[in-house]
Image (cartoon, rainbow, N blue to C red; front, top):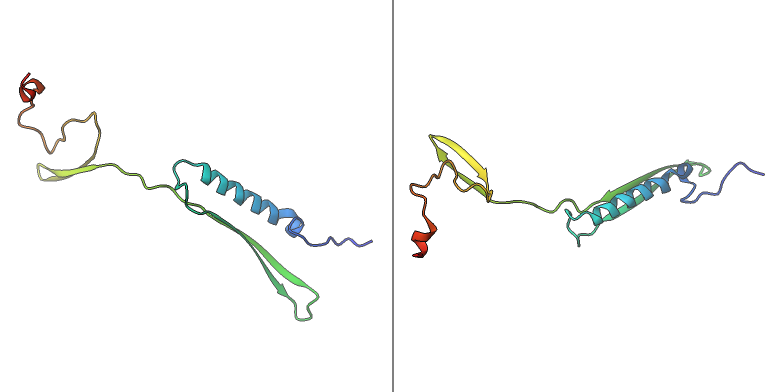
Length: 118
């Protein structure tokens, strides 16, 4: 009886190749479930097995490489207001609770009753 095991994906590198593939697949599935990624963008898991036989072809050195391509995050953004105040450049993000920008202070705050005629 031989100590050798027939080669398969399950046996490559003591099962390490299949383990790496499973981990990459789990990461891809996690990326698919992430609401911050593009839903319909393709993901990819690639398992590459490189084989280099010896000159007499009775021995083969091999390398297993597992790579993944995720969708990446969806672009996010808002509105940025820019201006000058006292010679300084300023930039602020939009915030509905922030009525006035320090570089664009109104001269008069309007009363809604005045505007609507109520």
